[in-house]
Length: 264
Ligand SMILES: [Zn+2]
Ligand SMILES: [Zn+2]
Image (cartoon, rainbow, N blue to C red; front, side):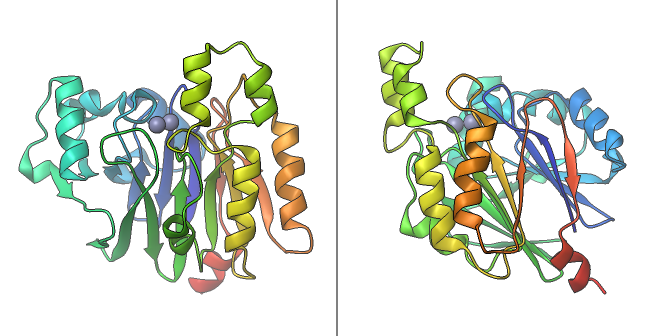
């Protein structure tokens, strides 16, 4: 199983899992053209994309849904609530044959993969994160959450790869230029995950199995990639876990060692 961070941050989010035959995207926050270009740049076939799983309706996660609906035959995984609000925002209708209904807490079997949405504390209609399991490889993409909950931690256990939000440093956000209401929203229990809260959650779910951690949804204004590296490295000290940072503009591809081992 390959994982690709295609884009991550407040200007657009898109992650990809590919088993060599089919690709599942998590979120559609960058253009269809950029999705294709970035997959190709990593040696992945854009023609292998079969579905897009939508976490919630904020524009940095669904901006390209309308174009993807018109120009591809991809299916959309979404809860009924998220589907309805995405349709209202984009003035579109996702037909039944293009919709894979999801419900937080219930795993769906998709082409032999297990795709498991679970609830996040975030200020959207029905926000979820996705845990993806295929061929003995377990991963989760967990961004856009205001604080770490026990339910989120439960779904981040026994993972090979964890993509986890490290949105802001609380002091940088407090001292920065954002208007007070926006600061309050980000800092709230349904906003975004601070570096300190990320460290708390990461420490709670560490295991020998977790070989790869990707820090994601970093704020360009209120965080510093080097600071994220320092904070995460402190938690990972003594563990054989590799650390990566997902970017807004630069895509990268990972082939987790345990996933390779599982396929042999
Ligand atoms: Zn977001
Ligand atoms: Zn959001």
